[in-house]
Image 1 (tube, helix red, strand yellow):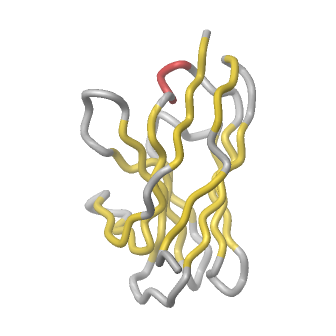
Image 2: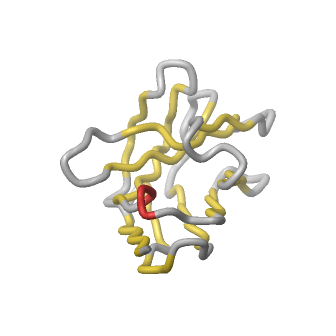
Length: 119
């Protein structure tokens, strides 16, 4: 079983919504876990993070107000609700079992799920 596995990507129109899921197959010990994305020709970037114990959420400026990160109480499943999607949100979205919400770095990656937004 993969340590981290994403699902829920797809192809949508601008303005549509998608919900990504991440299943964590083992226990992680960092303060937070999170979502990152990588667009074609660009480096992977932080999207959102959530504190494992306190549930505090963190977002990049580009998605704040449109995306919502959440998790279950057991820290086994994490979601990313994406609303009002824009073409610039097109990327491969990765779940990170461990995320540093201050340095915007992550570790323990899934294989990613493709999100394509057309105008």
